[in-house]
Length: 233
Image 1 (cartoon, one colour):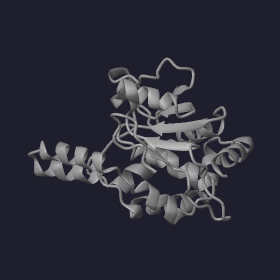
Image 2 (image 1 turned 180 degrees about the vertical axis):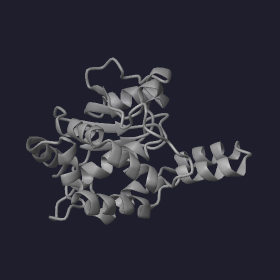
Image 3 (image 1 turned 180 degrees about the horizontal axis):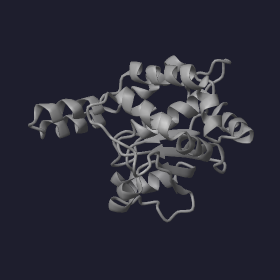
Image 4 (image 1 turned 90 degrees about the horizontal axis):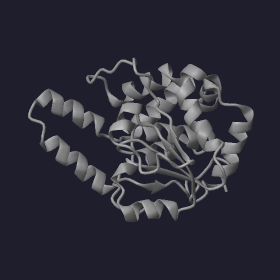
């Protein structure tokens, strides 16, 4: 369900997604968002009115310093980047390859972000990056998978983008003249179900599944149980 938090472009409540045991994700428990620095004063108030108990900002420290969150001084705010400063970046890689590289290099960072959802006080948890698609999309996909949402539903959810974000992407692409750079940027703006399905298959084949991957990264038994209890109604 798309939420209206002015002027964010890609905010969604993950409530209602089905689980393999016939239940569903609880409304208001987990929200995926683009950059909260876009929020107007009314948007900030909308977030505060949404019974949010934790905001997990997975942008890098330089991103946060250059474009600070309006909640940066709030006790419920956490900056939990998913990359290390020396992690390599190759613009020629596909989005699937970028995701897999991030997951393989930093299981501790991904597990810490999922653990922060599990450990949050009672209330909703917001996970956001810049566009609300890639870094936050991976954290949300891991959390939903751990909560027993089937892979096809996780992938379909990953692929949902607000039309306002699609328009924003199109505007950015229109400013790029170099065809190679435009093609690479266009790839980074995609959100295909098959991309996330490939990532989940990689985790299955390489680690034995999402839960085993997160446990290898340091997620504990209590956190696994707490996450499932808070997300599934």
